Figure (cartoon, rainbow, N blue to C red):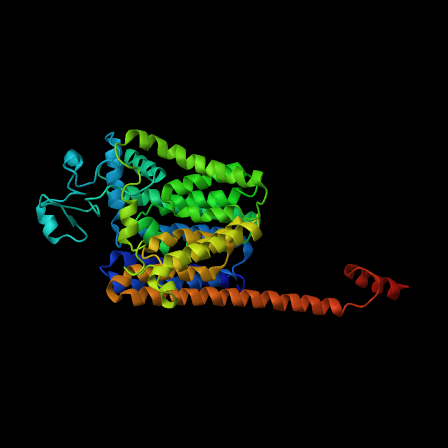
Amino acid sequence: MPRARPLVVTALLLAVLTAALVVLLRGNALGVGFLTGYAGCWALFATAVVALRRVPARAVVPLVLAGAVAVTATGFVAAPHTSTDSYRYAWDGRVQAAGVSPYDHAPADPALVGLRDEWLFPDPAVCAHGRDLAPLADGGCTRVNRPAVHTIYPPVAEGWFLLVHALSPADARHKALQTGAAALSLAVTGLLVTVLRRRGDPRQAAFWAWCPAVPVEAVNNAHADALAVLFSVAALAVVARRRVTGGILLGLAIAAKLLPAVLLPGALSGLRRPRTFLAVVVPAVTVVGMVYLPYILLSDGSVLGYLGGYAQEEGYDDAGAGGRYALLRLVLPDAWAPPAVLLVMTAVTLAVWWRGDPERPWRGALLTTGTAFLLLTPGYSWYALLLVALVSLDGRWEWLAVALAGAVAYLAGPVIGVACVTGAYGAATLMVGAGWWARRRGHRLTAAEQGGSEARQPTTGLRPGQDAEAELHNGAG
């Protein structure tokens, strides 16, 4: 019974977490109200992960996997709750299935009127009372956000949208992309468990498998980040042994979301020889070029779509325009923030590349990714799905505070303002610093204890393992 108690406690905590996520996603709370319930789910998640430490080793993997299925499934209980991005995904898949490049026409373009339906382009009665509907010039509306601009998503993501559309029933609507996202999320869990059973502690997989960000952002909102995370984890898992394969997978991750480009320094950790360096970089760059090429040939316009407009809209080109660079702006003039980001990221990149552990590329990848988040202070919470997966690989739980800060910025930032973004990322920075200090102090204490025990060893001229044998032999004689 004492050995079974931690298992029962952890299972009960997972059951409560699952119920809380169902209530949260099926409710009507938005903004700060949703954030309150979401924070409660994170508290339950943290408690369950702590309880998992005492679960017997043979029960860990089954429990992690069972919990992953239960937590992931909660994303199905409602239509996308806090984001409308998946409606754009569905539209892009439909456009491609019709033989049209998604980069050539905005959803509002009259040339694509024949592809519209009542789900993505509701009738006027729904437009008058619906939520999260964007108006159209002709008086109608659409669930697709930013309908007047071209798509921003890279080609691997576009291929995913087309695949989901091709495999889905005509009336599947949002469930199709949610189902695909759930499959990707569970695949990430399985991959993490496989890697960590061989090169770490499988308990760490729970950081991804049970994290509330997965059912909310990856499944319910069906963000394409889950696809990029799968390729990213696979790349970091194999790059130490198979450089070219790792480079190919990293290229696919970058061509799915662009954000995984920050993983490149981690993938290159300790690779100082030009041959090994190029064995990763060249395949990654080649894959990105190859997957873009078909769309370049099929498109009349730029395949970058709304990328430049998005960067401007989010304030990355003007540090004083919003909540970006929030921490740097506390100590620097606004105009200095972008150059400061470039300088710090260059220093971190070089340090990871030169001094990183090639056997654990995810450690350097976590450092570069987490640092980028703290410097840029992004306002979209689903970006941090990549960070959550890296925490699972490396086990440095304190970086999860950055993921939660992104949720605070996204859900409460529009209501409270820049101060909310600054406070959330500031608290995350303190958490990361506290985790680093505690881990460093632990290493020093361990080293001191080991040094003390060595100093107390009797000087017998024997190896430490031989002392007891010698005493037994002398006593017997």
